[in-house]
Picture (cartoon, rainbow, N blue to C red):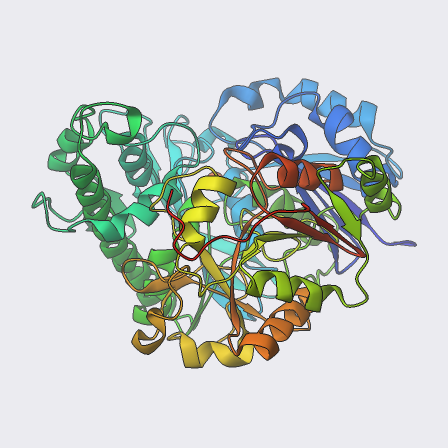
Length: 566
Ligand SMILES: [Fe+2]
């Protein structure tokens, strides 16, 4: 190939997304929700020309190949129309080529090729993926006799660099909600009985430590090798919507909800660890690459790392469906074009390159706003650290946006982890969310093992780690009720501004920890543009926004009192 190959990956399902792999190591990835401002927005016809193309310059380059993935909804029935949209929108180098791939395989390509491993076991577990009729991979025991409507709910692979991964087992489900199956379905039902809206699984996970994991005396899930079934006792409880209606405005109690969350989380973790043990037994692999919606469960992930027989675990920052576009792009590059990929997911700043003048233009637009003052401090990190030490809440907007759901420093809200009222203030007055939701910490990587029970970098906030008991009282804003925190270790190599900010804060206060939560207001996805971030500043009660080289403050804003209550 004369010039760098360009492959576009498109995810047409939940958390619609697009990705571009250019050459061996350049990757872009962007979720639809960031553009439409509607969380978990599903991919639909029209997204490519109307949303992604204007925003992502990489899509305007000549393309060698497009790879699409669908899931279990009906959009794949319209695949011809989608293909036509691709042909009408993108400019191909040579004969247009469009490939479709099945859902779990796209998750797998988002997890193993970008991992640091030479070889690994691969595990994909989500609610429901492609039906058998749409599979683009072969699996022993699944053939033309297999009913074509069965859906994949988990898939297991042997992975080695230089050869395509081999799927050796899948759990299939007939889609009958009277007999749901698999860990993804279980957690979906657990979430749905207590909360509305898509993507509320994190609320259940945050709620679980407030409850008693044995309160209802429910059995473990049934695990048979890689298959997970949900006992009738569980299904009966999960159907009792009145009892667990506390967060839905009904008569149910908080205690019942917390107990159910705790018991469900226990059952989920126990079953996941059993499946993981089975996978290790089957493969003998040292390492695990894990993706699918269930891989966002930080408490379970922490237990896999600590308790499973795998030495190391890689979970892509976009483990959910939003990451499958990237999986499509890498699959196309490696398996369809036969090109190597040297992309390793070492940071998650995969959003479009920012327009050079965009920040200045957004700042100019608010220059006359009397509610804001714009400054250009000589040392932005030190100026922000000073504000944080005084009890102000400071957002950071810089560079390319995060591809996954966790803000990792380019679209973040930062606060003082030592402040006794900071978690409540951020939850109530900035994020507009439930009081029990934990906030995650940033920590300087070299200080992490002293404060947290961790022995390796964890840069993506995917693992719930114990805060060492002697540090819990000093860090009330990030220590959850069970003594854990979902930490992000910070190094100058992949997050230089955060490292400078944390270092300035540590030098000033002695504390190498800060709160980091996603830059968005109530119910919104992560901000994408400078205008989004300024709107978030003005629409919430946070105090300042760092948007290099600018510091935008609200003049006269008072810091959060240490005895502040909602
Ligand atoms: Fe999925």
